[in-house]
Length: 458
Ligand SMILES: NC(=O)C1=CN([C@@H]2O[C@H](COP(=O)(O)OP(=O)(O)OC[C@H]3O[C@@H](n4cnc5c(N)ncnc54)[C@H](OP(=O)(O)O)[C@@H]3O)[C@@H](O)[C@H]2O)C=CC1
Image (cartoon, rainbow, N blue to C red; front, side):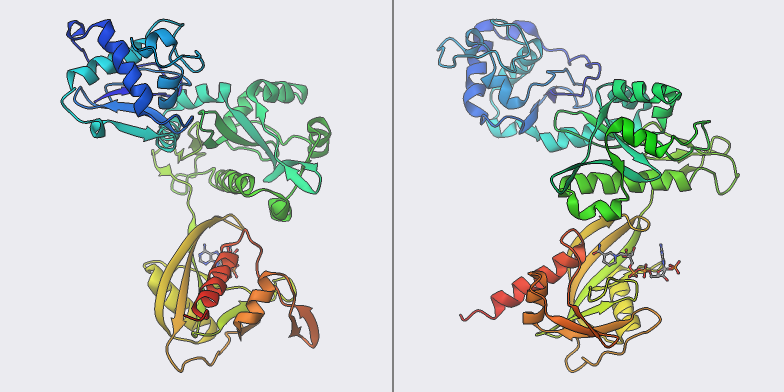
């Protein structure tokens, strides 16, 4: 296959050879016009155009930087839009000067015409998501590419695992800094720009702007970097380093998800600076997707602990529980870490039996979530139904403070924060459920919605 792609500013690989004598410029222009009509003009949706039949994908990656598949047609100058001239080009997004057919595009068209017998369905368009994923994969694998990406990337800053946030009308904004801004900052605090190598890759934009996170408060074993003074940095950066758990409810979901990833990765690196076999300092790769012990080459990868979280129902009520550490009145679904060797199903059955003494009959997977507190967990959320007639709860007081069955009306009210009250240690507290961001909330919401639907008259 021959590819036109945005390969993130990397050096283009040469095209497979195509016999140039096969097609005339007129044919190329005509094909451009067809592509213009065939590709829906949704900017940012498609990035790669794979043309069947010539070479392998790996062998072909010429760059049309910043140009999406849609732009290839839409942005092409009018002279390139084919002899019919229906497509008045704007020049926007075109990868070549007006009137010239972009070289990479020409190449693909030569191939396309050469394989003209095949239908348009043979053309595979890789989505922005796929190109983004492949770009991130490359940055994780290739230290040089990752270092290069830092030059155009942006950085989230942390201090001792607390992200830098700025306040705006009861919400938190998460500022990002360019490499040059970061270098200036480090130099102002008497630090070497080499510290930037302690940063970890946490994602990228659709335009392949890589995002990194750097903790200015943690020390790394492999560097001599000292922790930078928190309050002076806050003044300089016009923000505050706020514990992520406290900031959670004033962040938008996209920011919180990125900060979850960033904090978890930074935390993992902080706790894995030495090889458990040799005792020697381990070395992080540029992206922070692994650490290697230089003496014995053991590779350490960031890990999450699998946790099952289950909303148990008896058909009409759902079972919620609380630990003494929860805020007063808050009840949640049953959660617990998976034991070594267990399947998700086994872990769910064991946890429910252990914590509330019930046996499950049916189990249904719902969704999953990465949860960074206190260490990275992969939350695997399920709905379950108890065996008929087995509804008597026996609370394991070593695990839980209380557990109870709640009716649809009670749970629906708690979701809407229209508090029912609940008795706890001879006091009454508003009954509440975990906040929206937590997967426990999603499970409870799903149960309420399902219950509402099933109780509707046919
Ligand atoms: N996002 C969400 O909706 C929710 C997330 N959670 C998360 O799920 C996780 C488990 O919940 P829960 O069981 O209630 O949590 P707890 O924090 O009560 O942990 C229960 C027990 O597990 C032990 N433990 C800690 N880490 C591990 C591990 N990696 N593997 C095995 N055991 C471990 C603890 O030991 P020790 O004595 O060392 O503390 C503790 O005895 C927690 O991280 C919690 O934050 C829970 C509910 C909702």
